Image (cartoon, rainbow, N blue to C red):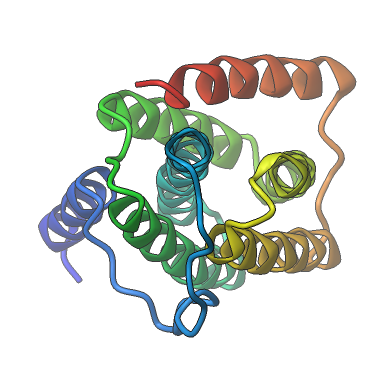
Amino acid sequence: MSFLDRVINDFDAALRAMAAVAHAGRPSPAANLNDGGMSEQARRHSAGLMRVNHVGEVCAQALYQAQARFARSDAIRAQFRQAGKEEEDHLAWTAQRLRELGSRPSLLNPLWYTGAYALGAVAARLGDAQSLGFVVETERQVEAHLNGHLQALPAEDVKSRAIVSQMEADEAAHGASAKALGAKEVPPLAQKGMQAAAKIMTTTAYYI
């Protein structure tokens, strides 16, 4: 593809991620499950948590898009693109679940996407090993975050819980793949910075 074609494709991917327009390649883990008798309070809480998860997938699309764009080797670029494609399933599943809960995605999705793309570009510019290390650390933190949501989601919200469980398994696989390709560990100070940024994002996205 020409440079212009690549720019158009990237812009289209960004718009689809921010507008919650995604197409899953796999059926939703919640497809054959029925909602339990959730109270309005429980439904609002589930919606807040799933909005946070949807924001995480918006960021994942931006990160992998940037890392693929600036990767130095074709093999690493292909890895990022494949992971991004799998993450698009999560984006579609969480968007659908938000609609089922009568809620909406974060109003700040353009901000989240832009910030994540910038982080992915910086990581990629540091080199493939550092970029892969960023993936490993990101997925480690996301796994912990999703595990926390499994504890926090209402027990009767079996649909959201099924989606989050599958997401957690997929994130673990992405982290393992990046590590196997030669990821370099992210310095402790950078890890703490990533945790702080994630805390701001998750706290805000629950409401907005």
